[in-house]
Image 1 (cartoon, rainbow, N blue to C red):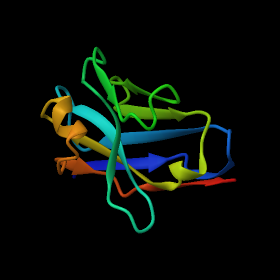
Image 2 (spheres, rainbow, N blue to C red; image 1 turned 60 degrees about the vertical axis):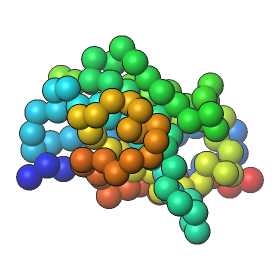
Image 3 (tube, one colour; image 1 turned 180 degrees about the vertical axis):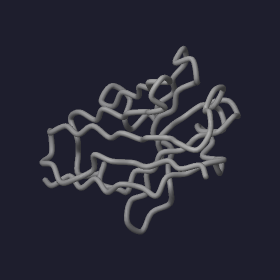
Length: 125
């Protein structure tokens, strides 16, 4: 059974940092791009960041560019999201996702092949 399990969410003050992690299991994720999405209360899901399997290409939403960094460890089947300079508007449930399509699918906020259940990030002002 394929599972994506997020961790690392929590409460942080504006300007602070958090590091989210996603552990993938149940299959080999070779050739799978992995990424992060978020959904704030009362809002639609939005794309945050994604990375190819090789790690050679990344893409970020404009709202997080320069503040968030995505990384992955294929040997451990994990992907991380380092979030710095957090703002109250970053408050959301953050979801890990994996898909065999290109990063364009992530950018276009398509439904992914695999999803985690999410981890809550709350940024206080």
